[in-house]
Amino acid sequence: ALGGGLNFLTMFLFGLAGMLAEAQDRSRPESTLAIKALAFFDLLTSQNAGIQGLVFALAVCMVASSVDSLQTGLLSVLSKDILGTTLTQVQSLVVGQMFLVAINVPAIIMASESTKDPALGWNIINLFLVADLIALSIAMP
Image 1 (cartoon, rainbow, N blue to C red):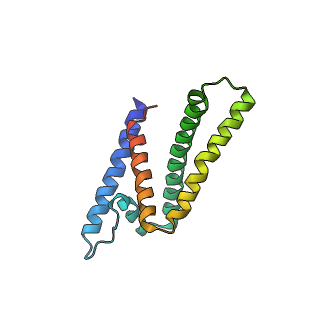
Image 2: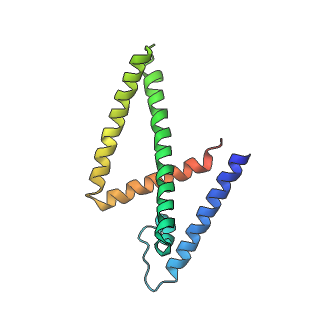
Image 3: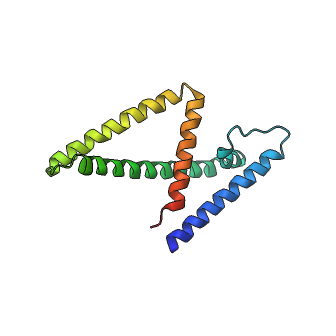
């Protein structure tokens, strides 16, 4: 119950901040928000460097934790269920590391390519924003 309440409060505050950022953008003579999903970060432009650094650190932690959970789940499914073999502890570790490399190398290549194509970069950011919002909305401790 406590976890659900904290998740609700977090989502409510981020939604409220997004609506305030949209209202701020509409009050300007010319809109500066190219992507409405990033409206929250528009509010940070008027904040001092300490607040911006704190928000950046928390955003990185949120993304890193969701990526870590995704990788752990994928590796667990691939190494145990799909292989369907009984592996020793060392073999299981090696297989898990191979799957980790197989997942991370394409992700790194895709991330580096997204810096060359801005449209692809924004699509990837939107994908992660949606994934984080879904994870925050449905995850109950």
